[in-house]
Length: 194
Image 1 (cartoon, one colour):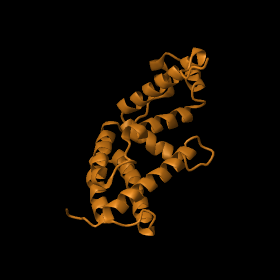
Image 2 (cartoon, rainbow, N blue to C red):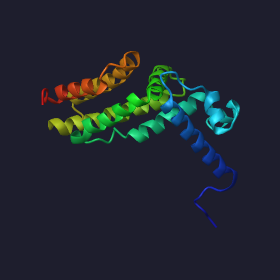
Image 3 (cartoon, one colour):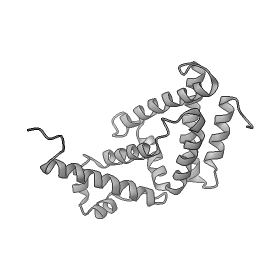
Image 4 (cartoon, rainbow, N blue to C red):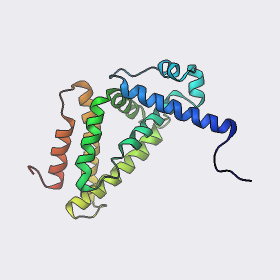
């Protein structure tokens, strides 16, 4: 008899892992630009730091899982041209309320340049996925082919701008990330001033 639902110790491990991920995402979301420590997260879950990393393999693997959960919640990659700016508005507005998550993204993005870092594969895959999604958005908005060199360049510029704006915002909270992204997007699709 086969049962698709996880049972026994495995089910408990999956449930504990989900709880840890939820608590870590919440802790980063509530923090200011000073990120919560692994001990703080472990305390909130009722585990030791070693017990916490048992479920993810390492601190960095837990943090990558937090970023993946953040991206899943944001879901900007699936945006159509007509709602791209609306989705970006929602995401960037949320980011201004969760500086700890923005800091985590920036820190892990910088660490991910090392091919041996736990975040490397996540950022490589994320960048490719976001690049392709933005090329589709730009193609639909401009009536061009998604794979054109121009759309590839524009998508790359948009990605770099979003990442760079997050760094600038951490340094100066007066930066209006959304306004700057909207202006850049409109310029790139040829609707500046509209």
